[in-house]
Image (cartoon, rainbow, N blue to C red):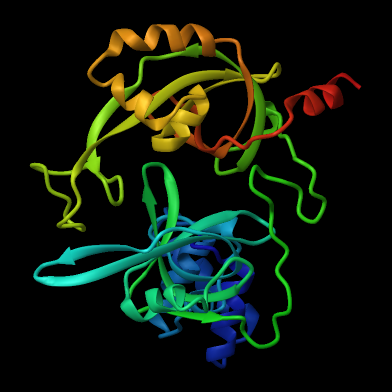
Length: 332
């Protein structure tokens, strides 16, 4: 729950109080009984900690979690290495000029995009202090979901330290879910994937639906309201594609969804060509026939579709790899 196991919560309560482990566990049990067992042990432990004035989340806000443990709604930290920089963009915040900067970081468990809204943080990108290969220690970042992707947003309440003392190296899982330190693509069978897993899958596109489009901000991609983005005053409405398809890896099939540039990568076409189908949907039929039956590697996250009570795959990357080598491994 919220990134902490029961034993960790108990340990933090003991650190801040004079209670023994047995006393803490007894109070947790009493708390659960009082709530008729409607909360887990971890939930009861969190309630007890709050009543005792113990901030059990302080350590993960500062010391951080593994990237694959991040969940929307958390306010936590991460310790990771920068693997890709994105462009710093300017926008209007009311009557004031403002900037937003972002970059991709990774550790040995996964990758996540960091979005910075504070000018002091953005300045570290502009000065070159934050660059590819830089180790960053982020504190008090807000984890959010954006079009199915997990991001960590930093504001004035957050802190980011570059190349922190005592940290010499961070092993990073490669894009496309490469096995850390090996340079070898790690392919997961869909039948072995669980909800919440970040995986790379090699499979065949067996069904493809016509792309749908929504009016999104040209700066951040979020849906605009009455032609305006609440975060980017100078952003202009842009047609953002959503592509749904069925993927089969020979072991199991799954419904998959790709947004924006990843949708173009799935189809193997330019972004502008895909956008043209918003006004000319008939033109998509030729592309559809070419794409059906193609095999690619898809990286992303396994989510739960509550409406249909089944797993779905949110595609976050379509890495360029030699699929013949992967196929040879399956055959051999």
